[in-house]
Every structure is written in C-alpha cells, then in structure tokens.
Length: 214
Ligand code: AMP
Image 1 (cartoon, protein in one colour):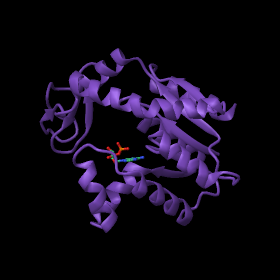
Image 2: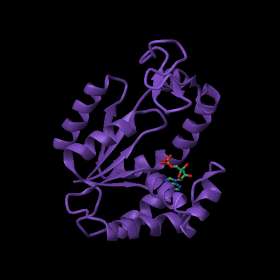
Image 3: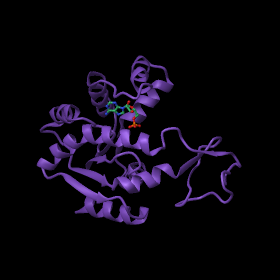
C-alpha cells in the first residue's frame, strides 16, 4: 500500500502517520526527517538543506527530488510506503509521478487531513511545551496538573514563538498556496480520501483505517 498523507500545520498528520506506520509496517518517507538526519550528521546535503530550512524556505526541487529517489532505492518498500511532507508542490508531484510511472511504486491513496481554520487556531494557540523535556500540553484539551508546570519533569511550560494566530495564518496560507494544486492533481485521478480531522484521535483513526481498507 503506497500512501501520501497531507494536512496543514496542526491537522494531526504526525499522530496518524505514527499509527499507520505501526499498523501497516510500511516505509516512512518523511523529507523533513531525512533533512534533519542529514543536518545532524552535517553531510553536504544536510548543510545545503539547513541554509534553506533555517530561513523557513523549501529546499529546492533539484535537491529534494533526487534525495527522495535515492532514499526509495536504498530502503525496503516491499510492503509499501507512507510519503509525509513530500510532494509539497505540484512540480514535486509531477517529478515523483515521472519517477514511479508504470511501476508498483505509484501512489494508491492520498489521505487529506481536513480541518477548519478556527479549530486549528484553537489547537495551535493553546499549545504549551515543556522547556526542558519538550512534553506537549494544551491549555484546555490536555492541561498540565499545575498551571505552567510540566507533569513529567517539573520544567516550565512555554508557548512556541510560532504558535500564534498570525504565524499560523502565514503557515496555513503558504501551505494552501503550494499544496492545493497537489491535492487537485491527485483528485483528478480519484486518489484523494478526505478525512475529517476535527474529531477525537480515536474517531479520526477509525476513519483513516476505513479509508485505507475501502
Ligand atoms: P517538515 O518537518 O516536513 O515540516 O519539514 C521541515 C523543513 O524541511 C521544511 O520547512 C522545509 O524547509 C524542508 N522540507 C521538508 N520537506 C520538503 C519538501 N518536500 N520540499 C522542500 N523542502 C522540504
């Protein structure tokens, strides 16, 4: 089963990806993770990627596309894969399609985690993270026992700099501008499964499994 998961910031893509990988044991292809691993090892690719990522820019396609190709070639994808964070633009979608056309690596389904902006705003602006151990809380959905103090390590809870409505607005509109054409592209082939991401984690997961087993 070859999948692509898409969803804006805060849509719960990470949580569903973890569950999909655990249940179906397919290969995770997360371009963000690959870039972070390369940066940690300070490889040539990592240093190049860092110069874009640090500025909040996308890494150019002539770096990203070949990287995905070589990752696929050297990894075990016999049970399929889950693409996560790629393709992010129409050009990347077209490049990936050219790479896999006519092979058993074509994308079967695209899961689109759909959520209204107001819900995202509530999720993102209420998020607090522990300065020390990075545990994640939410002021209403998942509060710590003592206000402002981490349950796990007693560290101070802080709000991430970019967890504001203004910053979310920028991220969401950037996301939509680039990824809407990707969604439209896969919709033409009838591959998009829209998931209502504004539900409890269990209900979203039930819908995801239904969409995958359909
Ligand atoms: P992510 O963890 O998916 O948000 O990725 C972190 C950063 O890596 C992004 O902000 C981009 O700078 C870069 N990146 C990840 N995936 C891609 C991609 N498909 N194309 C270009 N840049 C990417």
